[in-house]
Image (cartoon, rainbow, N blue to C red; front, top):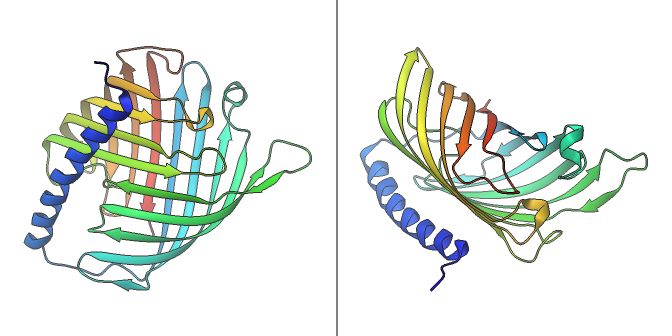
Amino acid sequence: MKISSRCVLYVVGLIVLMTSLSQASQAEEAMSYKLVKKFRQELYSESTYYQKYDVVTESRLRSYISIWQDEHWELRPYLGVSLQYQTPGAQNKYFDNTLHPALGVQMTYLRKISLSLQGGVRMNLSQTEKQSEWDPRAVLSFGDFWSWVPVKLPGVFTEVYAESAYLPRLSSTPVSTLWLKQGYRMNLVSHLYLDPYVELFLRESRSADLGPSLTQGRSGARLLWANDSWSVAGLIYHNFRQDESSASTEGLLVVGGNF
């Protein structure tokens, strides 16, 4: 009997979510609770190098206001804008350059699980006559989005991130992504780390614009600088199984932080 990548994604994701929720609850009880700042700005930028398609960059800036929070939950509306940019070689495969202003609201649990609902406008910047369209979306994510791993715990680490994004403008089926990294952390100097790792990456997608469905095993290395508020990471990784959607070697640069 053939098992689809979607079934593998859902089963693995469910196991990981249940295990991590249990661990997160135990960690929450063991540590003292501190309220986060009421107003907060968040910056995230991700640039991916594809050997076949050049570079794709997505950057996002959001300003949050926390209107309700307790030891576990937080509710925060936000105002944000995101920019997507491709080099000329990548524009033949991906979207044109676009700008996305948006309003939304985010509910978080244990600061590890979040549900974001937002409405916005997608504006095409690559055409002489700007075309715009409504771009509502809903995103459910699990994982420590801004900090790769607890930087005070060197040695063997496991990282998990799962996300399901619903964009009715493109597809009636959410795009789901899950990755698990297992690696070893080496502290080079203060705040600078080298992380060799192996990774399982899964994506289930019905929209070519959001990326094809993938099931990949990877090995790679990450150079990470991180402090309490900011992190910068450069990754280079090798795909064990090369196909039309990916090259054997790709790279990623991620910048994230709160201010």
